[in-house]
Image 1 (cartoon, rainbow, N blue to C red):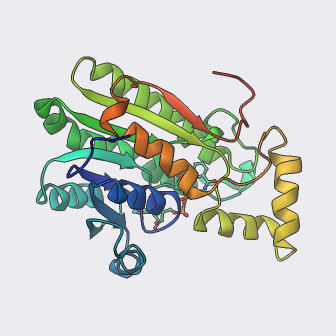
Image 2: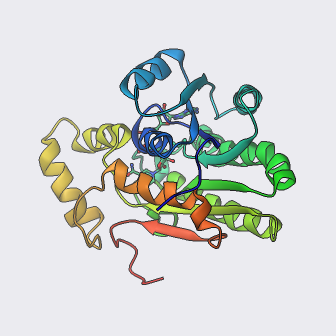
Length: 262
Ligand code: NAD
């Protein structure tokens, strides 16, 4: 299938590791010019080295958890051409009991996980509308629906992303610009590796991985972590010219964890 994204400029936030890096790689493999983003030049250089030969990729360091960082990323990316694909992927997570989540934690999670996507989307919508073509993706989570007891603050941000995505799609009715969210389930990324180590508290990581599905995610129908490439494949399709009739949707890539069929 020709995804019809050759030569299109695609910005993927938080793409030096994990799901974002896999999305960047897949989009580049399909011929898009990808902007790779992370907070430091060092992490970008490392990822660029790893992705050498995968396609056209340009790195731009910026902290999308701040307004200034989003402006910097938008400004520098737009020097490369009009942004036609935006994947709001950057996100943070950590297990923390509800009583221990401070005001600062709540606000930080909101800034990084929600405001980043809002600010980046606001920056790309005008030119996407003018050109009559655009793709905006929010990488939410099954945690948007199954709010995890071990990180309620994270769940809150992921539900908020669904509202923003659906609302933005409605404002872009009949413009050629589609907006969707993707709900991955547990996916084996660098961030999740750290998360599982934190949960293991110095104990056996393999045992913790197994217990995670048995105890925290028993409804998973695949009973394993997804690979980052499995999530990237769905995201790349939604970024494509072939996905023009899909907008305002929350697409699951959750291994069947959410116990509904729609
Ligand atoms: P990860 O921690 O492995 O990678 C996150 C990337 O984002 C890193 O490159 C990091 O440097 C970057 N990043 C973090 N904060 C940033 C900031 N302020 N500015 C710029 N870059 C920043 O994470 P992941 O597991 O790949 O998760 C990626 C997205 O997928 C997140 O939004 C997460 O909520 C979502 N998600 C992950 C899973 C999972 O199980 N891995 C499941 C559902 C949803």
